[in-house]
Structure formats: structure tokens, C-alpha cells
Amino acid sequence: MLKHASLLAALLVPLSAHATDDEDLRAIRAELKQLKSHYEQRLNELEQRLQQAEARAQQLEAASPASPVVALPPPAAPVANENAFNPAVSLILAGSYGNLQRDPALPPTGFAMAAHTPPSQGFNLGESELGISASIDPQFRGVATMALAAAGGVTVENAYIDHSGLADGLNLRFGRFFSGLGYLNEVHAHAWDFVDQPLVYRSFWNNQLGEDGVQLKWLAPTDTFLELGAELGRGRGFPGSDRAKNGTGSSVVFAHLGDDFGSDHNWRLGASLHQTRRANAASSAVPDLLGTAGGVSNAFSGDSRTAGLDFVWKYAPNGNIADTNFKLQGEYFQRRESGLLTYDTLAANVTDSYAVSQSGWYLQGVWQFVPHWRAGLRYDQLAPDVAQVGALNATNVIANYGYTPRRSSVMLDYSPSEFSRLRLQLAQDQSRLGLPDNQLFIQYIMSLGAHGAHRF
Image 1: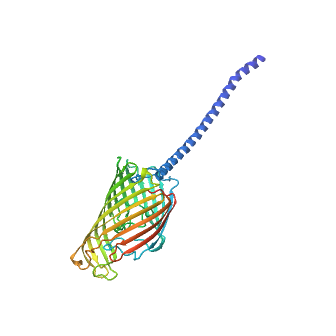
Image 2: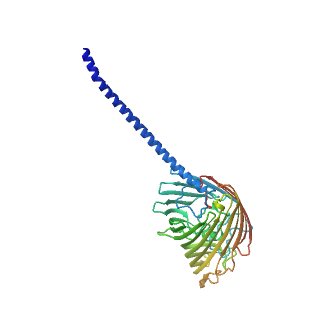
Image 3: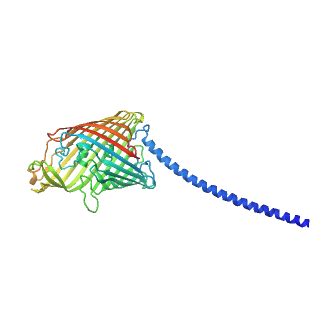
């Protein structure tokens, strides 16, 4: 009996050990599976944190006062402090006080048929700007900017998509955007160095040329900055006429070339060409020869072509723009328009040929002499030129005004941080024959939210 019991015990021992081994293996496998799942989750979290940290580092590097002077705009799809789940939202609050001796609605002499949106007299809330931007995915980024008018109402200033996934150096932008022509045109109002735009921008582009369309930019893979761009648009921005039609109403081509001189200096040169067509473009209060005291209403239909040159030179000791820096910039535009002019549409209604070449330029320098404080000086000038007027309107329309509109401005501003600026500006405006105007402006600009730093 004892012999049988001993034999049974001997047989059960290995079976028990085998069962224990199976349980241990199952437990080990379960633990490994749990650890693997846990570590995969941790790795995913760390990768997301790393991507966010890299984006923040690039943003801080771009905004750092100690960073080298950047001669050129960033690539077409810059990384901002934003991601697909948390769009960057900003609100710009701006306002001014203007003391002017003359009615600001009066246009420069010889440019009554051009655009004219001057600063206002007295206290003025100005235009507040609400901006939203975010990376949509690795290939697309979206930007929307809404302008909140002082009198009420909201207009869409920018609303576009950037697509940088075409090829190296190529960026496609589509939607509503400020054109890439010139140097100042893409700069938003709250980043201007003066309260207002130069006379040539005010008269030629109604302060800024904005379009609905597409833009293609190519940044060459070279040490020297070379950027080429082309745009096709609806033609909604002045001097175009916003018409409901198939096809395009305007086109722009531009090129930019730049480089650095050591760590202290950099420069950029640019050239651009804009073409559009005006259809029954009405102008009121035009002081033609036989007009009433308040002028007459004219209409023009024809082709408009504008060529421009721009340059900028920047200096910052050792590339540090926080302590002191200097920026010198200038632009020149020449516009040729030819077509049919209808004189006094409300009465005489006489139509004949009309052609004119007008030009304008400005030169300005802005010097940050100590941290937070800047001073600036600007001179701008227009040339009305001599128009070619058809025989039917030769005695109606002024062909030669014989006057050169010009203006000189000086400004001083204080910026406690990247998010606030207070400015004083004085100007001697001689843009209207026999109506000199000494002007004073006080302005504030405040930025709320995640608004990226502007390029120097």
C-alpha cells in the first residue's frame, strides 16, 4: 500500500510542476503584454511632446532678440506656435487720434481718379484684426484674418491655405491674400512703421492690393536668397474691377533676391509686375476744366499695368536686433493706363480715348536707438504726368496738372514688448496744390493672444 502511495506521489510531482510552469508562463506573457502596451502609450505621448517642443523651440528661436538678423521672409509655410488641435488665435486692437488742417478726403493733385483712403481726423478706433491660424496636417496650413471695422461690420481680409507638399522650395497659396508684389504690400497694418501707408500705396493700391486667387512661390535651394512668384486673381483689388465672369481678372509676377554681409548687414531687392482691367471705374469729385466747384463724375474702362522696384537694407550689430538696429527701405511704382474715359457721366457724358503714365515712390529709414525706442523718417512723392486725351474731351479733362504731390513724415514710437506699441507721428503734407497740411497723429497698437513675432 505504501509502495502504491509513493508511486502515485512520484507521478503527481512532475504534473504539478508542469502546471505551475504553464501558469507562470501565462502570467509572464500577460505582464509582458501589459508592459508593451504601457510603453507604446508612453512612447506615443513622448513623441507628441517632442513635436510640440520642437515647434515651440522654432517659434522662440524666430522671436529671440539674440537670433541672427534675417534678411528675408521665412519659407512659405512657417511654423507657428500652433497645432492641429489648438489654433493660434489673436486680436489686434488699434486706435489713433489725428489732428489735420485739411479735409483728409481730398485726393492728391492729379490723382482724383485713383484710390484714396486716408487716416481720419479726431479720435478713431481704427480697424481691429482677429486672426486664426493652424497647421491642418503636414502639407496644409490655414490662415484667416477678419477686419472689425470701427463703424461696425466684419470683412474678410485674408482667408487662405498654404500647401507646401508639392516639391522642395515650392509653396501654393489659394484663397484671399495680400499680393506678394513690392515689399510693404504683404505687411498688415498693425506692423507698419508709420501710422499710414506711403502716398504711392494709398493712390495705386488703396493702401494694399488684396486678391481672391492662387499664388505659387518658389524658393531656390541656394545660399543666396532667390524667390520667384506668380499670381492669378479675380481682379477685386484696386485698380481692378470686381466683375462676375469666368477666367481671371488680374495677374502678378515678382522676384526677390537677397543676401547677408557678415552678421551685421543684409539686403533684399525686388521687382514686380501687375496687370488688370478696369471696367466702368467711377470717380467722383474730379476737378476737370468745365466741372462744377465740387468736380464731376467720370468713368474709365481700359487696361492697367504697373511695374515696381523695391529694396531694403538692414543693420544690427552682431545680429542682435533687441538693442539697436536700422532699416532703410524704398519702393518705386509706375502705372500705365489706356482705354476710354467718359467725362461727366451725370450730364455731358462724353466718351473718348484716354491714356496716362503715373508714378510714385517713397524712401524711409527707421532706427531703434535704444531697446524699445525707435525713430523714423519718410519722404514720399507722386508724379501725375501728362495725359493723352482724345479730341472730344480735350477741352474738358485736365491733361497736365503741373504739380508734384509730396509729403515728409517723422515718427517716434515706444514698444514695451512685442505685443504693444505707442506712436507719435508728425507730417508735412503737400500732396494737394495750394493746400498744405501739417498733421499730427497719436496711435496705439495692442496684440492679444498667440500672435507671432513680425520679421525685422
